[in-house]
Amino acid sequence: MRPTSRLRPTRDTVSTIREDGSHRFLFPADAAGRFRRARRAAALVLIAAYLSLPWIRVGGYPAVFLDVARRRFHLFGLVLAAQDLWLLFFLISGLGFGLFLITALLGRVWCGWACPQTVFLEHVYRRVERWIDGDAMRRRQWAEAPTTLSKILRRTAKHAVYLALSAAIAHLFLAYFVSIPALWGMMRGAPGDNWGAFVFIAAATGIVYFDFAWFREQLCVILCPYGRLQSALTDDHTLVIGYDWARGEPRGRLGETGAGDCVACDRCVQVCPTGIDIRQGLQMECIGCAACIDACDEVMLRVGRARGLVRYDSLSGLTGRRTRWLRPRTVLYGALLLAGMAVAAWSIGGIRPAVLSVTRMVGAPYYVDGDLVRNQFLVRLVNKRAEAADLAVTVRGLPAGAAARGLDAPVTVGPLGEEVRPLIVQEPRSRYAAPFAFEVEATDRSGSFTLRRALEFLGPDNIPAPPAPRAPNSPIRTAAPANSDEPPRARP
Ligand code: SF4
Ligand code: SF4
Image (cartoon, rainbow, N blue to C red; front, side):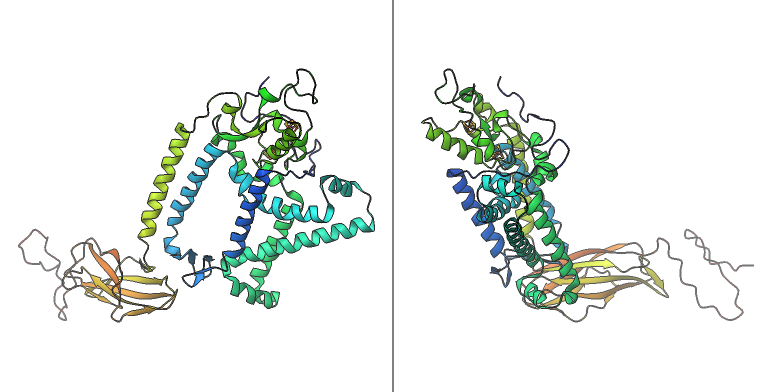
């Protein structure tokens, strides 16, 4: 019978967990072939990018530098301040819809080809394991062998290399937040000089080491939310790695009468890094690494049959039907991706080299002080460039009689710096009738950009007339009704 469901539950537990709940450590065999070579090339490019981005300088700063301490985020020459972080919504949602679209079209190509978990595990840590312990059979033998001096030495060497690699990955990760020179300075200092960084590195090293030395594929199978979303993001027309049931079954030895193309060698199972049998249909544990394609192609070539018994195809294609690339979900994800990218591009195009923000000072929204109504603000100027900025700050749109104080001189903001100035706006009480709008404007001395913020001047709804100075012993007078021509009456 052919597989019918897309994600078939083939057993009660996942492949890497034993019946008693303990971790079943896997020893996947090596598979050689075109996908293996292509994945290794992709992994080298990705690892090289991870290693080099903090070193490559664009506009005087690392290509990717998330300077949390100074709230500046450098992305390939684009500098974002904390005030620009709303843009991340569009960037992250764009990336999310991009991943949705790729998943709907190409299945778990991200997991198998580009996810850091797969890249580092398959192309760094497993290589160390093969180099020290040997191939899959030797690794299993070492694991099951009694404890001897040779085994202890081998294990110590392997885990020392794992730890060194984990520490290197953790240090480089920190460099994305503090820059390479600052990281180097911290490394030369005593741990007590940089306790925060030291604890971060120790924790990150421990997590990376635990993950790649022991936890491994369980992260994909048990923890990763993206893996869990597969059944919602894919359908019968999504490109997956599948077994051609019609061609392969019934399985049988080479030359057996009536047998299909599958020679039941189990090579596809031996190479699987998550320990599943692709012949049982598409399963949640499959990370799309294509190792089983290479393994089966190798077997097929050896027995003189066509490659592709296990191959990239949609479930539709594997059952002899046409694969449809244009589907409602791919159109929807594509449209959302384009919309997100368009908004992100438009928003990024509007980013200025400085930020002006004006907030009301803590306290009352206005003060009535003698004959004046007063509003108090804080003007914050953030320079996102590597050179100082001279900004002339002016207040525009005040009605006659109103005045602003505090921003008379130009403000010089240092490279990547920030300056805060108080701004007092006041209006004679007798002139104030209702809230009014005005604007704070900051202009770069070179005239290359102008920033504006709209504000509102507030005051009391009904301002009582200021008490007239009273002559000694004069009678107290009350105000006449507003609609009356009567002169004020004396209070009895
Ligand atoms: S079934 Fe094949 S593609 Fe899926 S994880 Fe195993 S080896 Fe990789
Ligand atoms: S590698 Fe190919 S031939 Fe061998 S068991 Fe797997 S599907 Fe069958």
